[in-house]
Image (cartoon, rainbow, N blue to C red; front, side, top):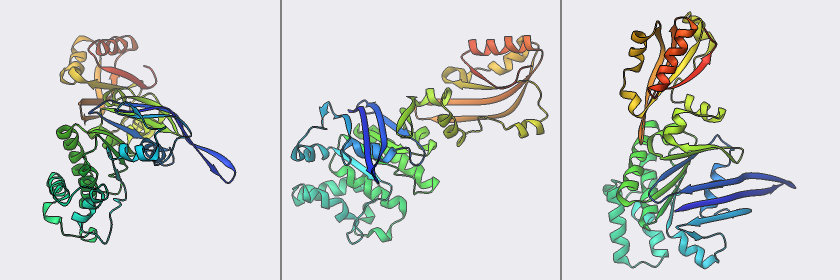
Length: 339
């Protein structure tokens, strides 16, 4: 549904060439939600603006629903864009227009008659739960309500693809949660394919099937959300994950806990989350688990549990215990030292 092949975007700034996006490949299948996560300056906004050619790539090709759009004429491109909705961090609402008119205006510009405009505006206001705000102005709305209006406006053209440019970054956590629930509802009920960019790992956690980690314009890691939460490889990915879970213990904290020897992180995913594997270890081997920290992360398509432990015992018994855990489907990663 959304496919980017070797997309690069360069800018000329003060006679210097800046590469904002560098050889990016993305493939979002119909009905999926993919997320691109990166820190400020990573190239996220440039990348998503390339998808609907608000920024034309310097190199590479972009396909929407198997149609190559990078070579389309302006008229044909405008037609394709009617099937690509977009929501922005800043809402982009007309301050002097009512909620109803903010949603209706793009439809009027596309030539829909009054009856169809009214039908669509009312339909999508109901979907975003703002029927009672139709005659309000943006200044009378909360941030979350403004974003719901922007989503209704994007949906009113009944797109096949929805692009989200940091749509929740200006919102408080509770409102962010409600907007993410709305995106999941839209994806499920209408089958709309969604590509979003964010710097918030909780957004990826809540709604995404697949994730790309962007750094300096390049994708440095990618995979299913469960795979990346289970076994991140790149430092940037690990830093993002540390914002929602205590994956590592600092040396000072380990010293405060009076821990000597090895410290290991156990990651449980899928069926392994329901097994009492750690309890079995103390029965089967001459080791005693000391749990230092633990958490469970609920993802869109599964659950990932993390436990950081210190196993008391000799190195041979500890190694046997860790090997047993691996055989039970538990991923082990040594964080510090050996016994």
